[in-house]
Image (cartoon, rainbow, N blue to C red; front, side, top):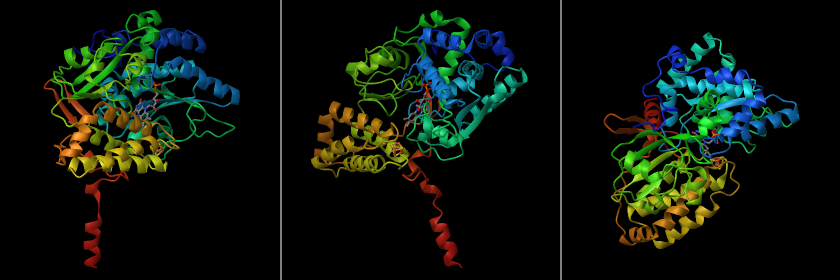
Length: 460
Ligand SMILES: Cc1cc2nc3c(=O)[nH]c(=O)nc-3n(C[C@H](O)[C@H](O)[C@H](O)COP(=O)(O)O)c2cc1C
Ligand code: SF4
């Protein structure tokens, strides 16, 4: 079972625009164009749609805020569709684009009309070759078909970096730079913005925009037939790790987390679960929490972008935290000292515990550093480190202390859970095969030309 509602995820990939239209596609854009832009936003507001990119921010409020900033300044605005999908444990945006790119593009055309944005950019990793190909082909089809706004959409491919998905990092990449987050938020200043001409940007996730097409086609009441009052609709979840059926599943929000992890993904022995790397660890006591933005937050965790990595009791929690924190230490861009150095120091402490060489004072240093890692942070990345370290040590303090006291190396064989592919037929998950070679300066260890150059110099 991939979907309990048959909303976003099709039963088989939609092959072309004709098939999309025959399946009822295109009605959302038609309905939107028959309405004034603000009336479209009213419908999105009535649906209660919240962003599926991580924070669950109300979509209509974001659109209105950006429009107001632009109107106040007399400047233009733009739309950015975030298809970077860099969160560990997540694979839903690539699945959506590969299987149903037309609803996503329809959502973009609707958002262009509703917001008055002059142009739209889709930021997607260059390495996602199949989704990029599908997107480019589908875009050409809707341009050819004359969909309103289609000719103002551009696909921008970007680097294999976590910060490409951070909204201001994405603006930088669209402008031709590295994904270095900005202090100023997109709703204040967007692409090529200045203090007098801010050009603010609406940044929305792939799944959020795909929902928009269905809401316009079917209406906000239909959208609210699934989900809870404060988290309406369905959401696409990814589950990987120690489960029998890893995969991508669309469920009504409000479904208990236990249903997703145990009944659907087949987890039988849950020790710790992480929804990406920005939220607190989920322990077995929290499994009956409904999957909702507020419900998960109240339970002390968060839903992130709906990607869950499950670890069973065969895993040492130090290995688990180490692999996740090491990811953040590498991906930190270094613009803020406390973030780059603090994450690096915490990763080094955890590696020391894993080698069996740590003292209790190292655990104290880990907790101390987790408090300062967010100092002067430009973006949310180190907040994730702080939350993950604090919650994991709190939940598993006895195991941390016992591991240190044992003074022996831990198993330490965990991959960084960056999903490259999920084969739902045989349950195989492929993770980023080269991530263990990625270094803190974003270079790869096997791309070091030092030995080659020295040899060349020695040979004259
Ligand atoms: C470090 C970091 C990485 C992020 N990566 C992604 C990503 O890969 N995809 C995504 O949609 N949002 C990502 N986000 C969230 C975006 O900044 C932004 O909030 C989101 O795209 C907004 O879309 P929404 O309102 O539709 O949820 C990331 C945020 C941070 C702090
Ligand atoms: S907080 Fe960290 S990742 Fe974010 S901009 Fe600063 S150094 Fe870079």
